[in-house]
Length: 357
Figure 1: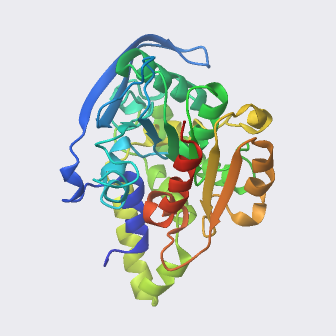
Figure 2: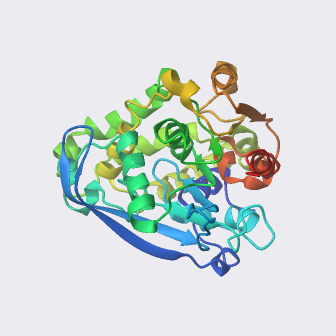
C-alpha cells in the first residue's frame, strides 16, 4: 500500500468501503427514542440511533436470539468502518468466522457519531452531555425495543468500542455469550491517556474561535486537536520506513492533517472525547460472567503495554484472558484493532470456548 501509515490508520478508524467489501450490502435504519434522559439529567426529545445490519437473526425453541454479534466503533468512528475490506473482508464473508450468512451482525453509530444524533445536527453545545453509560443504554434499547434482539452471541469493539465492551459485560452480564474488547483497558481514563484527551478537548474549548460552540466556521483548535490524535495513533516503525527524510515526513504530515480534519466538526469531537470522563469498569470486573478475551498490541501508544494494567486486572474477570500482540511489520499501533487478520485466531478460540451445548 502506497499511502502513509497515518492515512492508513485514519482509514481504519473512520473507514472507506473497498470494492470487494461492498459485496456485503448492509441493511440500514434508524431508531428514535422519545424523551431520552441522560445521566447528566438532561433530556433529548428525540434521540436518533443509526445502525447497519448484515444477515438475519436466528432463534432457538425458547425464542432467544442465538447468532447476534454487536460490534462497537472507536471515538470519532462509525459502524460503517467495519464494512471495509480489511475488516469485513476478513471476518464477515462466506466461510469466515463471523459469516454474515450465519450471524446477525449489528454495526451501530453511537450517540454523537455518524448518522446518530450529535451536536452538529443543530443543538451544538446545547446538546446533552452524554457519557459511555448513556451510549450503551441507548444501544441496548435499540437491540431490545427495535431489532428484537434479546441476547447477543458476541459483544466486541475497537478502542472506545472496546471500553464499551467491558461496560456491556457489567451492565448486562446475562445478555451475551462472549466479550472481546480490543485496544482498551478496564480502568478509568488517567495518566497519559487523560492527558491526550484533555489536549483534544482544551484545544477546542479554549480556542476563542470556538465561541462557546457557536462558531461560524470550524475553529483552528480543531487542527490542534487532530495534531494530538496523529501522535497518539502514530506508527513509529512504519513511519520511519515510509518517511526516511525530512521532506518525506513533512509531506506525509501535511497530507495526514488535511485528511484528519476533512469533514470533521469541532463540537462533535469535543463531545466524543469528553464522553469518556467517568468511564471506569474496574470496581465491577468480578461481576462479568461471560468469557472475555481482551486483545491489545505492543505498539499501541494509547494503551502502552508497559503499564501492566491489562495483565493485572484480567485476573479479576472470572473467565477472562488477555492477549498482547507483539510489535511487527504487520501491526499498526492503536489501529491494529481493525486488522482482524492479526487476531482472528484468538476470536476463533473465544467463539469455541463460549459455544453453548
